[in-house]
Every structure is written in structure tokens, then in C-alpha cells.
Image (cartoon, rainbow, N blue to C red; front, side, top):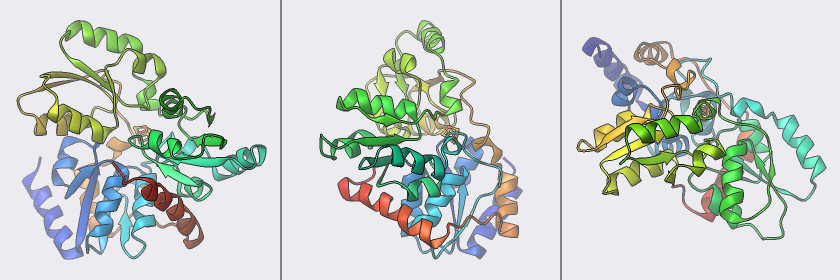
Length: 305
Ligand code: SF4
């Protein structure tokens, strides 16, 4: 990492009174320059609690939108305007409205990996860590639409024993991890514990040992007696796992599990973002108010994990 580059970022960050957030799936050098690393909701909550004027979100667009929803008075910057999320893009607000028309009376639970417009059409938000609890908190006889990730949705169905109306969205990066990848990784590291993200496909989850969100993976790896882990999620998290657990080993389940959108963010782009104050992410007030309501209702059920 160029010290000159990181020095410039730090200097400009101080001048702008900015806070830099990096999602767990960012490259190691971007994570290392950040004030906070973590999952998208936890980062947005942390940034809202700071007195920074500017938030630089090293992640994808829906994450910067979530930060803008929770911090309307701060300027939120996404260092690459093309850093989107194919999963979030798999459902539009109009498609959700259509689904609601087909199921009047159903409650809508939407995964945070969704656009601000989809959140605004939803009753509750959830994360991959608390999706099960959010659904369980709703009355047993309530019909529930769960969007946009079908694999997280199926995981919730399995855990709660409830029927959900699912949307066929999926994360292309997690879908790239196959059952054979897990079998091959197990053959190479027979004593390793397999941790899989709920966005993975069902065959992958069925043969994994632990189904965990990124935040839960970090906690689990720390307290586990195991020394070796196979990680079935975006490979960026291995940087933090290694840093936090120097005596343990972590192996990517698949080298294909790299999100090209997450990796659009580079140190140079973080610097340019602070220099030129781009790309500003804003959410119109009406959408922001409704989306915040869905996020607040999740937090009222249980604190974000
Ligand atoms: S890893 Fe998947 S869900 Fe996350 S930003 Fe990339 S495509 Fe979207």
C-alpha cells in the first residue's frame, strides 16, 4: 500500500471531517484505511452516531443509501458510482407493489440488500443475522412476503417452519460457490469448520457446519476452539478473520466468490471521492421516511446484530 496515498486520504479525511466505512467484502487495503469495518447496517448505524459531516461508504450503492437514510444531514459518498448490487437490482419497487397487490394483507419483510425504493414499500427490514427473528416476531397466521433474496428466504423458512412468499432474487457471488467447492475444500482441510453465509444456495448450506452472517462469522471464529475454517462467503472477509485470529487459518471455499462490484472500490477512488466530493448518494425525503420506518420497525423488534 502506498504510504503517500494513505497519508493523503487521512489528511483529506480530517479536513472534510469525514468517516470512512468499509464493508467486510472490501479489499484488505481499503478495510485497513477505514474507521469502521463491518456489515452494511452496522456500519450505517455507527456512522450515524458520529459527528462526521461526510460518510465515505466503501461498499455498494444500497449500502450508501442506507447510510443516507439513517444520516440525512450528512453527505454520503460512494467512491465508484457503478458499484451496484445485482441482488438488490433483481427487484424494483413496482415489482414489489405488484406482489403486494396479489397478496393484500401480507406483511413485507425485506432484506437490507435492496434499494431504498424497495425498503420504502416494505413493512420491516431485516439483516442476514436477524431475518429469522424478524419473521418469528410476526403473528403465526400472518402472510409474509420476503424479498429479494430467495436463499436467505429459504433459510428463514427452514428455521421458522413458516411459509413465505419468496422472490427469486439471489446474490451472484454467493451462487458461484458450489457444493463441489465445499466437498473439495473439506477434502483438502478435513479438520476445518465450514462457515456458510445464508445467501449461499441450499445444497451448499446443507453440507456446511455453520450458517452465519458476516458479523456472526467474525464472532464465531473468535470464540471457536477450532483452528481451521473454510469460509463460504465473499473472500474479502478473510482479511479481517486473519487479522483478528492470528493463530487460526482461513480458506476460501471458492476463489470465484469475489464480488466485482465490491472490488470496484480502490484506495485511489477513495482519495478522488474525498477530493472531488463525489459520488453523492441521496434518497428523496418521501422514500427516506418510509424506508427508515421499515428499518426502525426491525430495530424495535430486536437490536441489529
Ligand atoms: S456480494 Fe452479493 S449481495 Fe453483496 S454486493 Fe455483491 S452481489 Fe450484492
